[in-house]
Amino acid sequence: MSEALLSRYSLSPGSEQTGALWLHFDASNAATREQLEAFRPELPTQVISALLAEDTRPRFTRFDTGFLLNLRGVNLNQNAEPEDMVSIRIWCDGTHVISARLRKLLAVDDMRKAFDEGDGPVSAIDLVISLVHRLSQRMEPTIEALHSNLESMETAGFSSNLDSKPEDGLSRRTTLLARRASMMQRYMIPQKAALEKLETDPHKFMNASQLTSLHEGLNRLILFTESLAEIRERSSLLRGEIDYQVANIMNRHTHLLTVVAAVFLPMGFLTGLMGINVGGMPWVEDAMGFWYVTGGIGMISLLLLVLFWLKRWF
Image 1 (cartoon, rainbow, N blue to C red):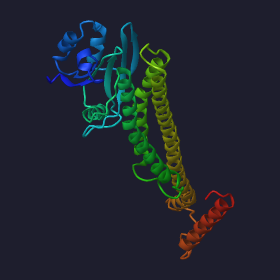
Image 2 (spheres, rainbow, N blue to C red):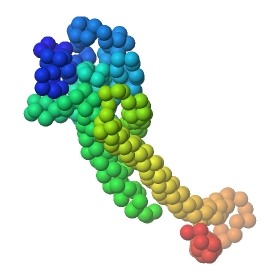
Image 3 (cartoon, rainbow, N blue to C red):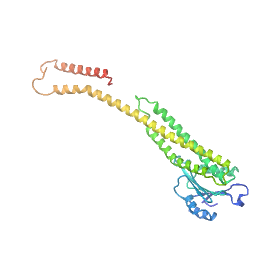
Image 4 (cartoon, one colour):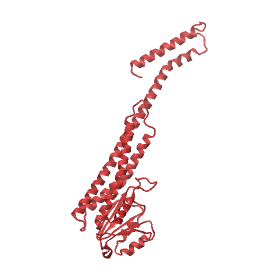
């Protein structure tokens, strides 16, 4: 087996003679195109190009001899972000399945392990449907983790009161969570549409049982898509609540500073007025003059505080 061809499995006993195979390629290898062209000369050129494309989005394309299905799975590779979803390109003609990937996808490794243990699918369409299910199985823990993170952030965000700031970094974490959900939803929505097209345009080699299994996989994907939409909406609500709390805290602080400034305003006016160097200033020669002014300022300040309290300004 060359580096370009990552794995080769028979889909049923004796299929090595009949040619019913699953071939899984490394699309980044320069030898892959040559091997694809040599293995199946009748493989449409546009299919080979699609299998080797650097950037793909989930889609379903019908051909006279089969179909092309591009799917995405969560990126569970080391030091990778799950929302940076990995693509797998699948060609199925009813007998053969040819798949290609640029980066490692654990859902495909699960399938290869099943074949190694003698528990792999026995037909081409069963293999495609099994890949759909395994991609979903790998997605589920990631989406559950997003839900769990959101619930913990909601507890921290909505339990805060107006006398304390929300948890440090909570706003940024909420934004990051919404971004992760958005990036996954970017691929999940067209992936749902691709599987819907496959379901509504079944080939002659897809029986009722296989259609039912595909429909179950599609329903699961729809649930994931709805969950991501819910996460984005709840994240937006939480971000709004955090912004509301921060704004109210700032308003309370600003209001308090305004009240303090209002109390000290007449004090500044009177002390400035009494400090001018012109004749006629009262109590200049009176030893109690300072205390008269101080007492007057104190009375004015007290009256202002009482007035503000009666008007519920603080």
